[in-house]
Image (cartoon, rainbow, N blue to C red; front, top):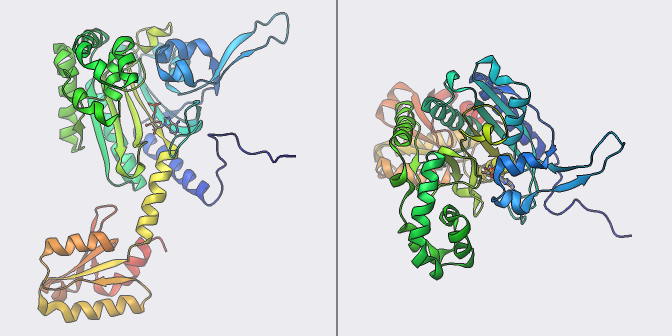
Length: 430
Ligand code: AMP
């Protein structure tokens, strides 16, 4: 008999990796609670019509990736029904919002979820057929302030905080605005016209998209097509005054909060329900599937699935990709020495050697810089070889208080020399 294996695109998660999954989920719950989010758990399968209407018939998800089956009636009183394993959770949350009349409270609803999603995609690193998303939605009647750009900025600031607290370094926040549905319709026509001449020179997918869904051309990754795409009109030029104002308010609030971002004119996202703000956090360490999370505003979604007007904004983090990123970071960190000692001036070299000797004899790994290095060079060398840099200047020698900078967290700490070994050991989690 042939041995049975987990189905293609699905995986078993085993210890010790499951401890990391738990840590991620605990951190997310803790951060969400600080922003007044509560947990929602919706069913893993739903009526197929929810996704057809809520995600959009034209999307890749609905047109080719859903696990759908006809559920047979068990009794004369039941009807057979088309059901689908959820490919994402926003539609389910909005369905629950409508079903439980949460809008009637008049309050803004802040809901988060953690759970498996299912898409029949081509499996590769970071892309699975069963994967887990950690997501949240902020939704409510317009009177609750659900349309306010402040909500967009709050959600983005929360995500930046969550990634930082998870210890994910080197993320990039890409944001854009796809405007109102009228703006999008206008831009689709602008693109359609612009693509008339260029599309025949592009890949077959783009040739098809140029007719069926021109916006999707912006997602194309084929290298030869990139110059054509870069030369296309930008969606920012098709936005009306209201949409422009909304987007400017989002970026102003991000600036005020000190959250770094880049505007990415090509970020239009795969789901049909997005309006105005769209965003994605990417990470260089992930390779081709570089999106850690994605989201945006969906002011018309509730109405699209038969509910009241309920603007909202939300996101979904790929938990599998958080795990991959953290594992890669930990491996990289493990290959580095505990500390790089940077003497500020050649006369401090002997003191640096003495300190290195102490640390090494205490069982820590250390690399020695050289007093002839300029500070910038010391930092560059340290970043490549060590997890932290310890600065040793005249002042430090005299006061006995050393400055330690941790590269992963960016934090700088003053540590008495006598406690340095203990500090380095503790902050390594040993
Ligand atoms: P989406 O629901 O398509 O907006 O995706 C949100 C996030 O979920 C993405 O940025 C990915 O991190 C993650 N994700 C989406 N599809 C998959 C998949 N097939 N496997 C693993 N993660 C995924």
